[in-house]
Length: 372
Image 1 (cartoon, rainbow, N blue to C red):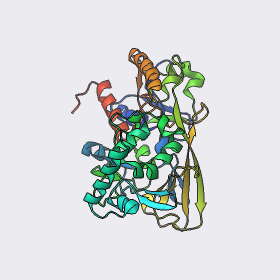
Image 2: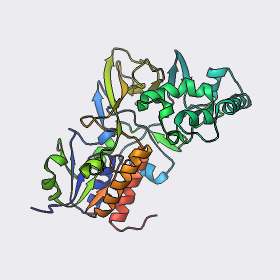
Image 3: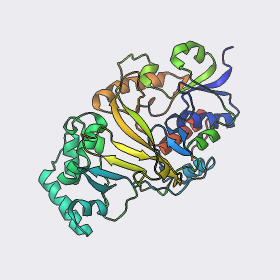
Image 4: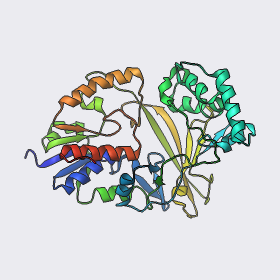
């Protein structure tokens, strides 16, 4: 039967789940499908040894928007976790983001004035007026020592390219603080949901019909016939059968290990800068929720070149890919029976709060409600 549902939502990540929740509240019939064996997309948590393991990398919720904060707090209680990563470079530990602790660890400077003098002198010596690549941009923002110690090799691992080959706009700015503050985010509202992100997803999906382990593209015509409209959150180039070519992504591989210790690294996130270390960071998940379990679970995160059989995590927003995406964007505008949303469909990096905000904006537009 055609149009059994008002909306078929392809992808059970945050965008799809928020849209499904809001549409269902408005008495619309929704079906959510996802090719993974679970809902929740990349925020899904897997319980291992009583620890909520962030299966697809660390997710820390942060926002300055009180409305968004209230929205997620409908579904879960958030703890007071603050992201304060530690970075390992040539055997030494440094605090992130770049702040007075970092500068003391680098140079022994103790006052903001001393640190500013050091950074400004290096910017003057190594910076350029019109940076043409990521390396030049970084040197022009923070100077040689910070760049070579804490940016260069990490970036090369992350993107699989020499920073000289990467566009400057990848780092439009680098936050530098002249206070002893290791809180990575500046946002007013921060935390991790107690019990993991599945609490939020389960709350959003209450009363919503969904099917997992379903690939939309294996039987596309059938699924499109199930609903009046499609909400698509997958790869935009795949949706349009790669008409203008394939877009590039970066992928990730995660290796979990259960360790017979109650505390492996003393911090949730530890970055590894050196190229000879193949992973970019180790996550110790119990610290997100201040866990007291007798064992711990760590995850090593390896950036990888993307191929079609791998998960696509990050769009590679260089000029060539952006030109291809712009052509797909024109096709999206013509596709009036499909709503596109999320990181892959919009070929854009989003944080969690931005995804939720984007989904709520689309909902208001779809149901012709006034935006605040």
